[in-house]
Length: 313
Image (cartoon, rainbow, N blue to C red; front, side):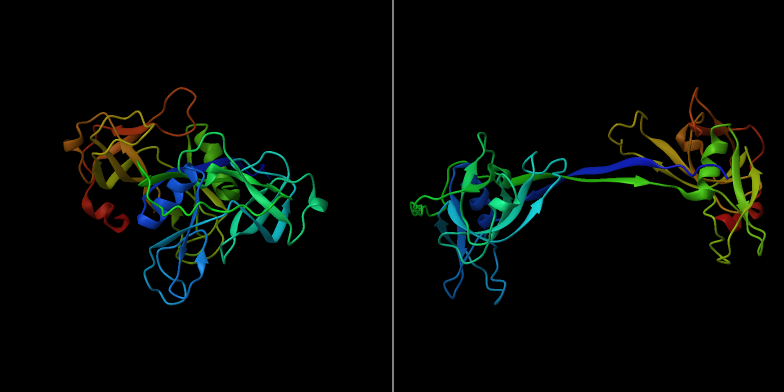
């Protein structure tokens, strides 16, 4: 049996959000080496601050400065830091209740080993050398055996406040297409398109999934389809995608390859976008070294009759 393919994949995007007055003051304060919490109606001080009381749902805006020193309430040792984490050497994730706060803040604690960390230990903030108004302005916490620091009583008003942040969301994972799609991908490298036939309904599915989506039974019989096909439906793309070297507008279509009972996706080229139509007969265009068609172009054949592809819309 051929080896099943697998490959590392990364999904990432910048997440942009605006900040309300409380979060704006908190992040701007970190930039200025000031830690702000928010006082609830019953006198509790929450750090990090929130805009609504988690108990009463009452809006809260009373900002109060807390100390950069505090106490570890619980912790876990991180033996192997990952990309993007606060420290590149092993460290502890710790919940630290800063002096003057009633809740704990999660951050990294720089310590020589797990034996040097314990609940109740005293720590202080180590500030980043360059600060921009983000939680990373706190580089980490570090052990501290000095006196409790006293806040200056900052009220939370700053010049040039931070009003928005951009956080990079990223997911690294290993993807395996499975047996059926491995065979499909391997066939594409030879400029062939292979689907699988359901033993019950006899439909041919491209790309194959290893099971019939209608009958729910396994599919193993391979069937070569195409290479020509019929446009069943399409859309005109008017927004240029980042890092995609295709000029807009262009057409993206569902294409029912000859012999297939499921339409696949493909870009239509070699024809003005406003001349693409349902029933248009097309064929794949391959580029040198590509493992899949770059796009599909008209074959010059008469358009397919609607009745031949209406079940594939």
